[in-house]
Length: 391
Image (cartoon, rainbow, N blue to C red):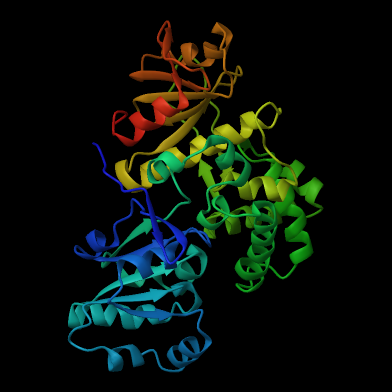
């Protein structure tokens, strides 16, 4: 599957990157929830692709107050020409979903409902729409969307939130993002009243990025109860800041672990929360490179393939970073010259005879093969991924 994306369009002196998510195509079929962390570009995407539709922005205090007093006001304001309606930041007023449900059924209106938190929507009745709206996620920028504007060092150092990737002061913007996240996503939602404790936890959780989490150690380091740590991890997942990567458990020769790994949605945000910078040549770069590739794989899964992502680790200590579906195993190595030992976990997994491909994605300049394992330059891997070659 090859996708043609026009990469860089200047609009109003702002870099506009055409996104893979096509809102017009989505809404031609059905109403949709469009969910994604703050600043991933939901509002910007709407303003550039749905220019003639009616938009209710619930961050606008006057609109929020009017609709909170009278949700039926939407029906009063819609005209026969309003076939598509956008409600931005729907999690701020989940009770509107009853009115959305009614208008979908009675008038055939199609809604785009955006949000940065699945938490309030779930509590407020997202299931009330039961099958009447699909869900799509918007991620930070991808390799395919950036095209010739992609730079690995920039992606790892800054992350891929659009405004920060192109920022003239990315470090300050990342620090501000981490602060606004604490204030707007957590405090405003009332998810926890103890912001200092959550702030301590957040830094410890960021230091666990890409690992199997020891919840007892996290609780000790963050000075909170273990039960609270479980709750806080749920908050991070619900607010779309953290991905859970489940274990692949189908190996038979070597007993697999069952615990999940966790990755932050953006490596720049993880770095800011850790208080570190990721640069090539540092020990931390390997973690950052792996997290970046997790972002690409998760984005491809959500946007295109729908296939599950997992990782594999045996009780004897072999670990493979990612498994796509039940066909492709991927190990990530931030090295320019790999040794046979670097492919040992993949070769151990190949002995299971369960998967079709075994790839080691690296910084090496040319493709080569060691036994069943293909060593790939990361750009060649990303081109093949987005062209649908690993389906």
